[in-house]
Structures are given as structure tokens and as C-alpha cells.
Length: 474
Ligand code: GLA
Image 1 (cartoon, rainbow, N blue to C red):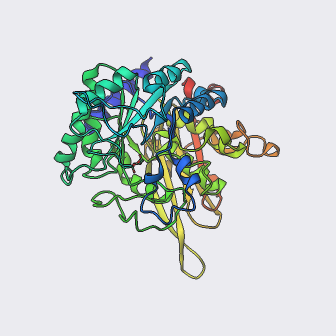
Image 2: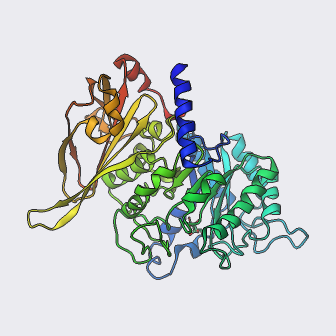
Image 3: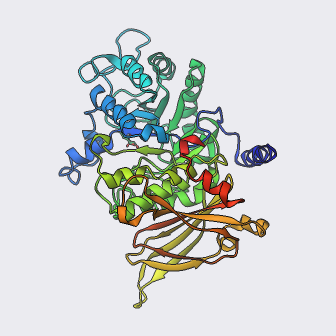
């Protein structure tokens, strides 16, 4: 009880330092779910993606059937029980135009959504899930459907009547209402107020790609905010359509941003995240085919420890064993949903050179607090495995104050039973049960891989019994 009070005190102090969070309980920890968009597009049009300016133009094929099948798959695969609860329709649920009757409420496409969104929401709720919808703070959405600029009240009201639980609110066709923080803030705050006025709890997922320093003003009006251009299913492919080196003063967030590019963008921005206010690193590409297993493990792990929303973007009805094993890693979900609700920080980034003096990548150390300890994540972006040793006291500054603690340490990506291989539930091997902050931990991180260690303080018996908890059971 005492530690809970201390925890509450700590998080209030931190929130005071970060600004007033929209901590209405809707996103105390990062939201988890699935979004209906990416696999439909990248797979169907994979041969076209190099020929067109944006894949978004081809995204208009979601149907009530696709959404319902994904919802059912969340239940059948057990993903729902792990905490993946939002089923989000992205762009293109729209009819060709709004209703012609004042005040012109939004209308869903009658062919692809013949039963309407309310009926779809009812079915998704009956499965014990929540439903998300998409619009843009512009005259049109990114795929050219009708937007919500000037229609905020009627749109929010209609979404609430339909039973919507989550709104992703994009930035296309904003008619030049951007370029200054206050201009963007006002445009997005209008929808925030409209959503609040409905009285229905609707998670507000702001998506202006980090334009106009979103992280400085979004925490007071939204629960999550995108902080970069759109992700592409690639570990590190170079692409000038994602031109900025850093998001801090980026004038063109773009799209086709590789996973490691987004990781780099996120590093200085994690300080803005906490309960009810999360940097959104964009949806997960795990299972879409563009990265290796170790690269997808890095992708999933880093999104989890940075406390990004975990929004799956793969086809849940056709997942292979490895994809499912990665997205169900219960230790990483547990970290993502930890009650302390703070992201890891990058505390070290070492450039690595080969024997010829050429830079081959870097090794990054990220660390942060957990309810009963700490997490350390070490990323190796080089094409070779990397061997190292670390002490908690060196990589997690707060550990200095806890020198007398004994910890159990668990490697979240080690196979519990190597003979089983990469299958669901086979992650998480204990490295030892009575380490202290100066114990040297040896590591071998695969090429383009990551190691994640959970340091749990206290009685090892208690710590290991907590280890069997699922994220959703925290
Ligand atoms: C923008 C968003 C994407 C996606 C598309 C849909 O590009 O950033 O996440 O929603 O629009 O058209």
C-alpha cells in the first residue's frame, strides 16, 4: 500500500514536470489493438508501391467483413486476452459524400459497410473488444475521403452514437492550417473538445506526424500522438520521402520511414510520454514480410519498451507461427503495460566500426523503470553479432540509489526451451536470481537484433511468481 502511494506520488510529480496529461483513465498504459489498413495495401499493391507517390491511394478496400474477421481473429488467437483490444478501421470506411441533410453527418460506404458502423460496433463490443475509426483534421482524408475540418461536432456526436471507442485523427488536406504550434493545436483541440462533449469515453489518437512540435501541446488534448511520417516495412532502407534527420524541427515528416529511422526520431521525444500521453511510433509491421525475425523482434521490443501504442498491422487471419510468437511475447507486453507507465530512455549510443574503420552501425542502450525494478534494452544495428557486458549501475542511473537490492534478471527474448524453437509462449529465460547492480551481465546481441532484460527487485520467489503474469493481468 505504502509503495502504491509512493508510486502515485512519483507519477504525479513526473506529470507535473511534463505538463497536464489527458489522464482520464483511457490510456493509463499504451493502447493495444489492430488496425485495418497496411497488410491490405502493401500485399495487394506490392508491385505498384514503387510506381505511386503514396500507398494510401490504394487503401480503399476495407469492408465490414475484413474488420469483423480481424476482430474474431483477435479473440480466436488469444491476442485479446493479452490486451489487444482495439479494432481500428483506418481510412476509407466512408461513403462518397456526407449526408446531404443538415448538419451533414458522416455516412459509411453502403456497399462495403452494408449494415452500417453502429451494427459493426455492436458486434465488436459483443466480442469484448473496442472499435476505432479514422478521420482527418482536413477537408479530406489522406485517401481523399471526406474529412472532419468544420464538422468536428457532428462527426464526434455521430461516432459516439455509433459506439466508437477510439478516433485516429489525421492531418491531410488541412488547408494550410499548420506551420505554427498554435494553429495545429487549435485544429486538433477542436476535435478533442467535441469528443469530450459527447460524454462517451473515446480515446483520441492524434496523427499529425510530429508537425509543429506535437509532443509539446498534444499531451493536454490527446491520449497518443504520432511523432513521425508513416512507417515502412523495412529495417533501415533509405528513402528520401522520409527526409528529416530528426523530428525536432522537421518541416516534412513524409512517409516510407524505416523502423530504425523512427527509433532514432523517438529517442529525444520519450521524455514527453507518461500515463495518458504516449508517443505513437506508428503501427507494427511484424508479419508483413519486409524484415527478418531478429529485425521484427527489435521492432516489437522497442515499440513495447518505448511505450508506443502496440497496434498490429498484419493480417491476423493468416499469421505464421513466428509472427504470432513475436507479438505475444508476454514479457514485452508486461513491460509495455507496466503500472509505472514511463518509457525507457536512450542512455548510450556507440558508433561501431569494422577493422577498416568503416562505420557499420551502432549499439544503443535504453533503460527505464518498472514497477518492481528496471528494464534494459540493447539494440545492435550492425550486420554482425555484438558481444558486450554491462552492469545495471552503469546503464540505469537510478540504480545507484538501490545498491543493496538483489534482483532476478530475465532475458525477454531468450527461448525458454530452445528445442521448441520460436513458438508462442517460449520466451523468457531467467539469467539468475540474486544479482546486484554491479553484477556483470554478458550479452551476445544478434545482427540487427536486440536484448531485453527485466530486472526485478526483491524476493526472487515473489519476482518469479510475478513472471507468469500476462500483461493484461497486471
Ligand atoms: C496517413 C496516415 C497513415 C494512414 C493513411 C491513410 O498517411 O499517417 O497512418 O492512416 O494516412 O490514408
